[in-house]
Length: 309
Image 1: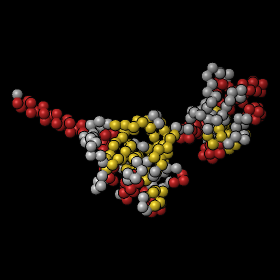
Image 2: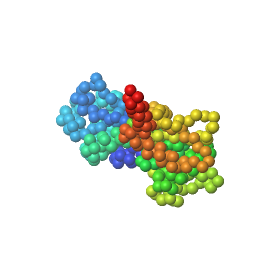
Image 3: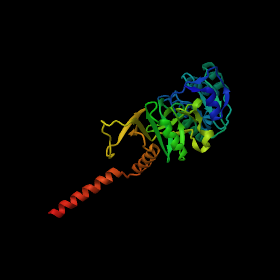
């Protein structure tokens, strides 16, 4: 569901015919321009989408005789339409108003061109209807990479994020990260409005990062490019030392690169996180240090065999 008030405010719409409902029954981010339906083609009619009426649709309806227009619109309104938006500021037909009132279908108007408004509407709906979940962790922007730091309470996530902020990076969310999938392979994380820009430091209390370090120390939202899980060092556990194997974690159906980072007293965690962010960027550009080292070893081994022969 989409909030009707937010829908109108964000998209700068004018209410032509409002209903009592506080939400709009929109479940998909696509739109429909019903020119084919007005031409009496009904085999495929995505009525569940927001209906956009632009210059083509309104001009075609105006050229129909009154009886035909009433019949086409009556059949059109037999479907459970979520809403109708008339673009370019065209006036609404009287027959349309009567039928919409009877079916309780809201009608809105905008002065924007249809194509321009359609792009804005699709972007708005993708954001509002994106699958969402909330996870415990800290999200920071490090060298342009969104690192979500996870781990048990008290492991040092917030302290590591604070050190990164001091080194010039940005905090997005502390303790709670709201995640939404905006594309098939893209996740956006942000902080809940109530605790945005606040951070809890054990022994100190709550601090306002924006006030303490300035507006440049915070970001409202950021893509999640890597998940780094912190855990206390376990001497009897074997950790990856080469990085030849890429690990991933599934969040909302998206595979996100992940690292398991063991920590112990004296380890400069902020520097390690910066290195992880830089290394991620290099891998995205096609360079993998572990593979390069392996290649050099193989070349050296092959060269030694050839010399023995």
